Amino acid sequence: MKLSTKGQYGVRAMIVIAENSNNDKYVSINDIAAKEKISSGYLERIISKLKKAGFVKSERGANGGYILGKKPKDINMFDIMSVLEDNIDVIECVDVQVFEKCDNHCNCKARKLWLKVNEAVENVLKNTTLEDIIADNNKK
Amino acid sequence: MKLSTKGQYGVRAMIVIAENSNNDKYVSINDIAAKEKISSGYLERIISKLKKAGFVKSERGANGGYILGKKPKDINMFDIMSVLEDNIDVIECVDVQVFEKCDNHCNCKARKLWLKVNEAVENVLKNTTLEDIIADNNKK
DNA sequence: AACAATTCCAACTTAAACGATAGGGATTGC
DNA sequence: GCAATCCCTATCGTTTAAGTTGGAATTGTT
Image 1 (cartoon, rainbow over the protein chains, first blue to last red):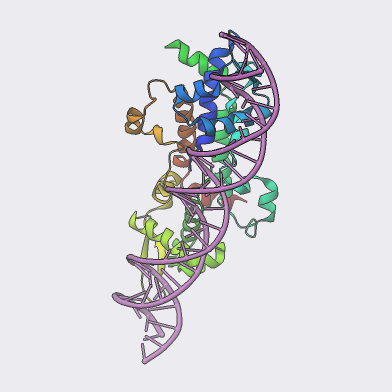
Image 2: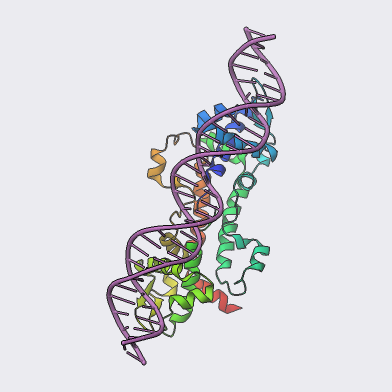
């Protein structure tokens, strides 16, 4: 039961981009990769997903890079994770349609537990915005 | 981000065993596997871990099988999962020692989020006992 | 015009984990 | 003796995650 590195790296990249977006400064993949010690090739693919989802905007060519596509308070961790993690639910049968098709579904006494776990994770992620994280780090 | 089938199957097996333990009835692996539609070979290895951890006791030979090793109220889901899931933490650096050794640890602004997610999961699992699950299913 | 810095895109590789199977030994009740 | 069981270990196939590579397109700078 692990968050994939995609999700982790994506969140960390978003934090770096957010910290530079105040002054309209575009950050390059190489800069982010160097700062966060992440393979830049891999990071590229991650950020490309974030771009498609509208969380960042890009500028090509020299002095290009990435900048936030929305306000930090409008970007929550659940949305980021949903785009990056291939499986956001802790178990497939959280999804009702999957559950209905399950061989065992009238008999599965454990499902309520999975739903609770899943809800707990979602709540934390949904209730944490990029703004929260930045603010929290500036406090110290 | 998925619970492995080990954890899922283990919890479901424990529920079956618990339901039979009232009347001191031993349940065989084959019975559990058939009821839950799980490969019996695979289930065997899972239950063997549960046995080593003391959650179930076994009896060999004909009419043998498994029975609870503790009272349902003394078995919580976190303990079961800890034994079965190879990685119970949602991210390695939840562990302080791993965190201290991390290249990036003075710089990692996302860790608080991982800690929160992890805590949320642990809370649900720790606050749900086998007794809770059985009771919850009898209600209906 | 040349060049360097960048985003963009797709194919490939490698390593690990998951889920499962197979085979056989030991114990017990009938 | 035999069938039902637990017990143990080795092996296997598939999928997925993680990361690499190579190259095209765009843009600013010199």
